[in-house]
Amino acid sequence: MTTFDNTLNADGALIVGAGLAGLFTALKLAPRPVTVLSPKPLGFGASSAWAQGGVAAAVGEGDSSHAHAVDTEMAGAGIVDHGTAESVTSEAAARIEDLARWGTPFDRDDFGQYELGREAAHSANRIVKVEGDRAGWAIMQAIIAQVRRTPSIRVVEGITALSLARDNGRIVGVFCRRLGDRYSEPIFIRARATVLAAGGLGGLYAVTTNPPGVRGHAMGMAARSGALIADAEFVQFHPTAIATGADPAPLATEALRGEGAILVNDLGERFMPAIHPDAELAPRDVVARANFRQIQSGRKVFLDTRQVLGEAILTRFPTVSRYCLDAGIDPVTGMIPVTPAAHFHMGGVKVDERGRSSLPGLWVCGEASCTGLHGANRLASNSLLEATVYGARIAEDIGGLEPARELTPFKGIEWNEAEGEKAEDVLRGTVAVQDLRRIMTDLVGVERNADGLRQALRGIAHLEATAEQVTSAYLNMTTSATLVAAVALKRTESRGGHFRTDYPQTDDRNWEHHTTMTLEEALAIRAGA
Ligand SMILES: Cc1cc2nc3c(=O)[nH]c(=O)nc-3n(C[C@H](O)[C@H](O)[C@H](O)COP(=O)(O)OP(=O)(O)OC[C@H]3O[C@@H](n4cnc5c(N)ncnc54)[C@H](O)[C@@H]3O)c2cc1C
Image (cartoon, rainbow, N blue to C red):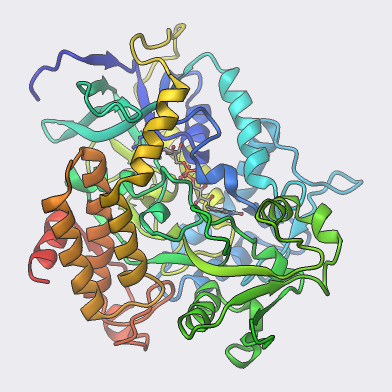
């Protein structure tokens, strides 16, 4: 690699992204030195802080990690890695203990035992939660406080990574910029080990539950450096995002349906019992498609909590209630309008059981990675678990770092909140970004077909060729979009989160396996579309 003037040294490991995956890895690396990059102030801009359900862990009486693994495999529609499911679920209790030790106030009964919630497709109550629907926020507050107390962790806020830096085939850090500062020279941060924990890609879709900055940057960045990507076609659409037109769309947690809330259309018809024996608690993809089809046929869909919860929704689901009240909906007396929304990416940068990607020097964890745990469909609340399990494994795997002396803040890239906010508004409003998001929702969404996917690939190529400013950040997004659409075109069957109207059946004979792809292969598919 050529020498670069604008260089900072991470002194040890560099973690890109400050959601649960990134911060958990940083804490597990202590006292070894680590630098964490966060585009926004800690706690903002991460899906982790928005999680409502909690963390899945077989810590209840009569439950077992094996039963949890079996449920994970069932949900994953035939392509979950058996060994991964068994090992991740067996490490869950220890990772919950870590979170509790670092201050997460999990709900407990009078005897100090966890009070566990239930979510669809779990055969036992095993969701470790906080104050009903505030798990993500509470977990993040606790670990952020722990990070701030840890002298070996240097947090750099207001900075966004653009590309990975390679030297002799090894990843040696990242090129980054102050958030939105498109005109300055990129800064190179050199690191002994680079951990990509920059989240999923829900924000690539026009209708999503993910924060605005979570738009496939991680997968795009890694793919542009040649990393192998796995299962990119599998995007989970949450059936019940609150449909008020807000972007992102706030979530109405599945736990509401777990409590007995029902789905009805604007004619007052309850449609789920005719579609699946588990009705509203059918697998997420089934419910998402049912809602999608209602909406496609001109109906509106509502979640009705009035009978089962009534006023209790205000205290038992404070986050959902607040979203409703902010949108002028009274959740006690009214029904909640809902729509499917891009929510979680099962695919990502392919990693092994230690979190190593196919590129030497690059580890990946959290939603950015594909570990094989989720298969074609994630079991609810398994993602926060996966983030912690792989964060711990990566910290153990990164060798050769001495404990930190005192770390000094980086000079010259101080956070300016007002500037950063302005920059994000610009990014959110860019026509090219909005066009890309529309393509993804319309053509690579809940239901797909060959014509639409080809059209999407041509559209993405056109945007790359004609967008006024093709920045690295934009290329990261179009790269991820290309990968999702290209693999979705290749997989000529329906499975889990991937539904093809032209191939509606599951084809085990040809497709009961993961897909892996490089960007080069995806671009070849795009060129022929
Ligand atoms: C509304 C909602 C509810 C959910 N509920 C649950 C639940 O109950 N249980 C569960 O297990 N899962 C849940 N999920 C999924 C889960 O929250 C995520 O899969 C998980 O939090 C991902 O963690 P992460 O650390 O990988 O990514 P995130 O938490 O998304 O963090 C990504 C980080 O990377 C940063 N970043 C992005 N781009 C860049 C860049 N270019 N450079 C530097 N940094 C960058 C972001 O700012 C952020 O700090 C939910 C998701 C949503 C959206």
